[in-house]
Image 1 (cartoon, rainbow, N blue to C red):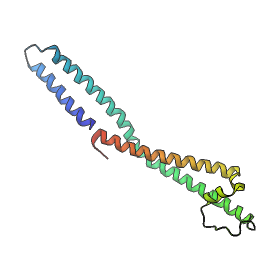
Image 2: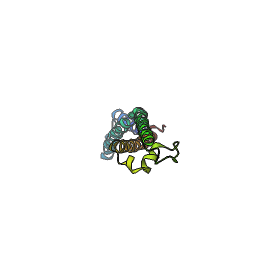
Image 3: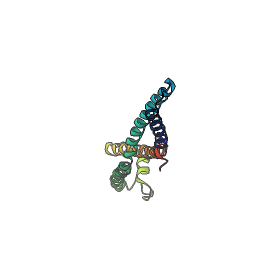
Amino acid sequence: MLILILGIILIAFVTLIVLKVKSKRQFTELYDSCLMILGVVSLGFVIAICCLTVEVATESIIDEKIAMYQEENEKIEQDINRIVREYMEHEQNTFSDLKTEESSITLVTLFPELKSDSLVQQQLEIYAANNAEIKNLREEKIEISKIKWILYFGR
């Protein structure tokens, strides 16, 4: 949309300049003011388009970042699964009636002994931070699609 508007403004600007150059008669201050305003507005549009284009250019790496965070979370889940399995084997007498199919993340939150383990606690914090970052990246991707629409009616 901004590119379309800029195109219209530039056409009007060039048309007014051509009329002024080809015409032999004196133009009014209003005419010169219109040229000045069109020039400033078109410069503003060019700056806005450049700034928004920089944001759109970052879209290509967002999916890679999301994949990286998801891969890191999978590794954390595997580590926590291993820790929970080892803990449950160690404490088999106490937790003999517990289902092992439950999520390891859920099991960690159920047992204070595991929850207080510093390694598990640190990994849970990283896991939560990664999920927050994935959410932010997905929101950023949605914002980029809005910016594309503003720039050129794109998706």
